[in-house]
Image 1 (cartoon, rainbow, N blue to C red):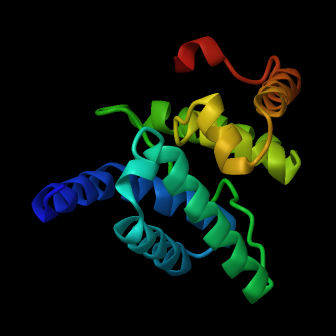
Image 2 (cartoon, helix red, strand yellow):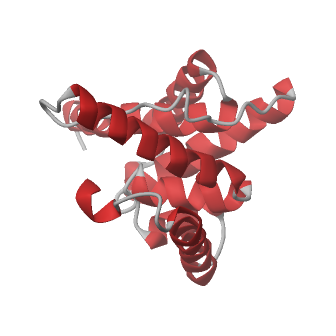
Length: 175
């Protein structure tokens, strides 16, 4: 492979995965600057990796490297700052009115409150699926658990949210 093709491959990976990986690393480290450093390390490792061994599962490879590095940093620094609904990124539609925005923020706050009460492993699986849009297989690879365990963790998160939020949110309206 030519150096130009390799550079293009790295550039495309950076454009596609940098922001989601920073969000993911930030959830683990609790600090944006630390998360950026973690992601930079992951991409440096990608530059050194054998493309043939990474192709076909790039997302899982990047998330795994990022996850491992973020947990190493977190252990080293000895801190864990869980994501709270106050720090969560709220994305609204193109032109919602103020009332719709307030309702959406309130609904997200309730969802994040319930999510924050779940075990860390369950939260991670849920976020990888619904925030980072990874497949069950990719999540399994990233977390180092079986597909069945991933399915179980996500089902548990959804069931808990459904039970806890029943009657509080009009979830059909959000879709």
